[in-house]
Amino acid sequence: MAIRKSNKLPQAEVIKQIVRRCSSFGKKQSYNEEGLPEDVPKGHFAVYVGENRTRYIVPISWLAHPQFQTLLQRAEEEFGFNHDMGLTIPCDEVVFEFLTSMIR
Image (cartoon, rainbow, N blue to C red; front, side, top):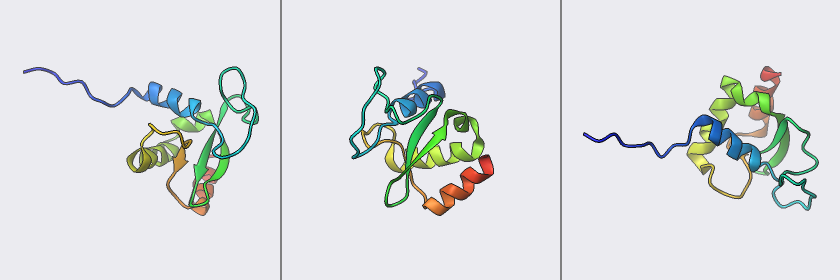
């Protein structure tokens, strides 16, 4: 019996992809030499939330928080991580702001 490899990437690789894709959707911006938007402080990344895709800048440390990981799992299930739209969180802005206030 052969062991099949999973198509899922290791969590560390997924996190790297998320951080790389933290560009601004539909906004003109300047980018640094690493291809990241200059308005995103070091140690942070951008996410887009809600129907209006409101942009939030969040600390990378939140990636380890269980509530934020739940949001990331929902994002992966709904949109996947293999697109150029930026990391979109599929929940209402009010819910996102409530959850992130608990993380702070």
